[in-house]
Length: 233
Image (cartoon, rainbow, N blue to C red; front, side, top):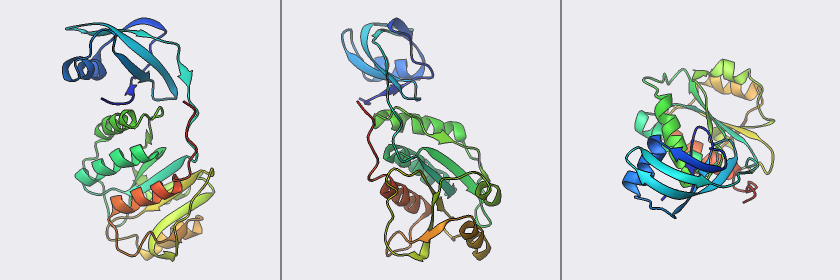
């Protein structure tokens, strides 16, 4: 059973009918019964406990308690990455959501041109992963853009570029928001690396071996979030 079930909108306190994927999962897969308790969230920080009142073919009816609002986890990490193949990208979205990445920014680079990107699929994966890890905030999934316009956007002060030729050691961001930039399997071109450095990204190597894009992205984000502050229960 997931630790949290995310809905588009959190119902008001009192009895409410649930339909859609969450209701289907609870009734058809988990076969919840009257009296069972579930935790609901709107994916924007509001969480409420709900007791199952009854189930039927249309869905289920729950009694929703008073909601509470959780603060977002700090730091907020933006993960900008050249898209790997679909299965690997799916893996990255799922596990980086569990780790706590706040913003996913797919990139077009000289050596990677995302094809058949399925943002709707990624949103479903991210929502499921957020619920499984009891995360009250869904990550933001942005449309893919070229590297250059991404570098021109307002970004956190702490900016790290995954680079085998970068400095030693893994940097923790503490409470400071951060951006992690990860290139394709062939790496960024020299010109792209120079663009990133000129935009304030500090090259940092993430270990002794050559990593795939999704591995480097998850490792960089995980270490930045290692000392993250947990939200209040």
